[in-house]
Length: 459
Image (cartoon, rainbow, N blue to C red; front, side, top):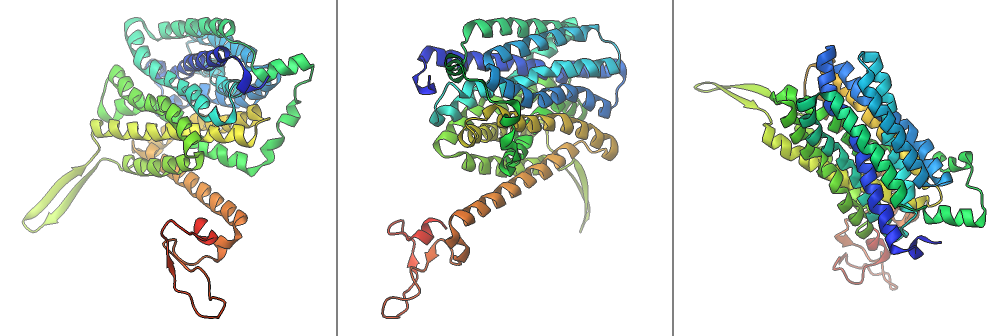
């Protein structure tokens, strides 16, 4: 049974129930962004220790994505997703039994299994849709990242009213109930059903890893390290950043941090749609270019200046207030969301038979960004002592991703269209030929949009 021929109701149920399930999983996965603040105060942790604590679930959620993605291809995303959520529910409930820092680190590792649901959902949802609609479908599913905002908006209220332990209990119940609903409301994906009917064995684990030898897969992984890894890192770090820089309370900090998490999640749908319409490459250029500009602005620390003027010293301060900061992180989140969808638009197109493994490794590397970066943020705070050092690091990261993408694309263009190498004229002015049949020179021709020669078309 092909994706284009499946019943519409089953297709839509698979998409929307999976999206809801992923939203709940993401809310659980980022739970330490809020309860970690209270745990930090109770245990007297420094910023490096805090960064490690909130990053531990991200580590497990990242490392598990490759195996879970492959298992989703082999055994079906429906059963794997259900088991992942039940395991995460048990681990989240167990948080309430821990009281020491090493204990919290170990418990956080098990909670992180919730993050592995992403590669399962990508493999599952992509099987229900034809290629020309996969960008939009995966963009909708990926909007489940909004679960981070759900935690930031609701968890502070629960924590203030009843303690962080109650947050863990309620989040555990929510993901357990969601697991049951997911299993009851969805069906096995079309390819898994067809394979069972035909009696074919799934592709072996080692064979699923074959595409990982392609450098292109690792380039996609770097893209996702920024658009997703940095998103997760900031989603975890921003409440702490806002409390430290602007002196906000945890509820207000969580609300402003949600102004970053919501666009960085919901607009992933727009990113998927744009990737289908104008191409994922164009979306990635916009994502990296705007993100580089925003990160550069945010990286500038609050600074006092004294100018020795003619009639005396002139003092002034350059600093980003809380309102401009909120606007800038909203913009950053918006373009990150476009980029997340664009990266995953590539995978089912280039690797239709290995969505689980390729999507898993890309998700793994991206998720590792969510593990490494919060630790790096905390360490830079302790070592450098500048709050905006986290955005300095992100600027370097996005600049590197943009450069690699651009030069890789240019190399592919030159390989496909060798005539580009010899083109020296600007695109606006081209030379149609060196001479006509009689040997007389031909004047340069202005590009008008009509009658373009092959060189101009590919310039």
